[in-house]
Image (cartoon, rainbow, N blue to C red; front, side, top):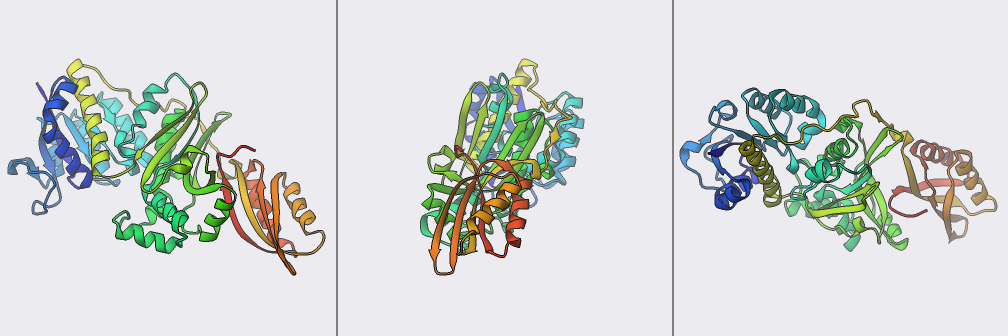
Length: 428
């Protein structure tokens, strides 16, 4: 017997997937215990050059031909986006096919619909490539950590923003300069806003949160802030304090409620995530029993992501051979509350420009105290009639910090809030 594959899309990821299936066919057969055969590939244009050489009769411009083909066992969707990907996947299930997808946007927004369709059809839906490219994180979260309770997930899950912040850190570049370099190297999309404004990371965190806490978390539940307002001064201040600035995806489960957020944050240089550079990704998991774990590697690119797709294909092929099914949706805490961002527990680094006169520090400290935000450390610099106050807070709610910032702006002795950034991963 052989397991027959229909591929939707043959771009960077689809092309790498097809190439791996063709070049490593013999080895994959040994691993799966059955032959895996690429039968049909759907693309938008037949004239466009492709990274894999296949017989002419394997190509089609009609994706519905693939999902309805009775000779296809597994449909692999790597076209991305919501439509037509969702309808094609649903049609594949209705035609009795297993599905592998790398589509984070679809899973983060309409995951319940496609997972319910997989359950109803009795077929597998696997999506290792949807988060972290070639980093194995989906399967460990679903299977390897099933005996533990995950308390927190924190990660760098977007390579473009990590590259930009790395260049700003290393060279003193502005955000605009680092973005231009990332674009020149091909690290950005035509519209880079999904990366730099945190949308991509939020989709990935929604998937990770759903798996980590067995709860239904969608992209809209994730509070999001991008990196476009990070300045060289922010980076420099972080370095002076022994920190690096990263775009972090952070999710926690506390008292039955899930908090999920994406934002720039200062990390101690001693934290494992602080050393993740350039386009690399990493996910840091804190378990009740296992303690701290980190998964690190290339988070994007055809080879790494295609490898993850093929890994899912091999697992489905084994299941077909053994008459078994993979693990379906594990979101059994369907009633878990999503904690609003104002309730998230955070720390902040704050820089204030103040009038240098007696009593200023006391009035500033009074505003923090009135909102039940404790100051962990404070430093003052300046001369003449102007000074700079640099403070780091203890953990308090996001809402309490925001109220504090509003009231600080109303003090006659505070000229401006020059910078504010959350602090993660540092002991209090």
